[in-house]
Length: 197
Image (tube, rainbow, N blue to C red):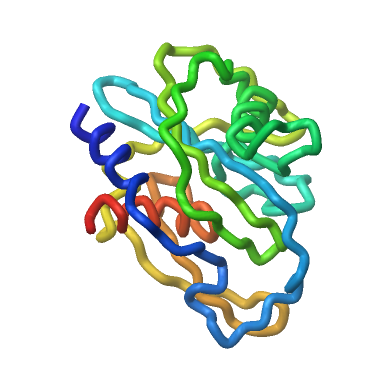
């Protein structure tokens, strides 16, 4: 598939670390100095003839980013061999995606979140269909967003909302009824920028 070739070529390009503060350079991170390593899996999968990205809607009761659209992922634990291993483990725990079903292509530059996580986005391709098994304690819903939508820079906009007493700008890339924003949108925009040049 042409899009797979584009993805692999995009991963070779050098890039800078992205951040939730990219649009807010005057805001000083409250968690400055707190950098918990985390990893997410940007899993590509062919569905109905289209290459799609697997996203999740996080459970409403979670401490960090409740109800938000996100990639499967989480903290890199001490027994994880790498960020790649952590992303595969989390995807299996959250949505039942077998690690052996994923071909890893590589990673994007790290992304620093407003909650103090340094997130390593890992890209991979799901070779065979699988039956999702959602961890209801973490995941409310699974979403398949067309890759063509997420890598189109014209689909993105900048919005703002009040956060900790001040207005903060952030990227959004809505898809149907789903409001994809914040760190997830910033990471997919990074991929879109690499592909578009």
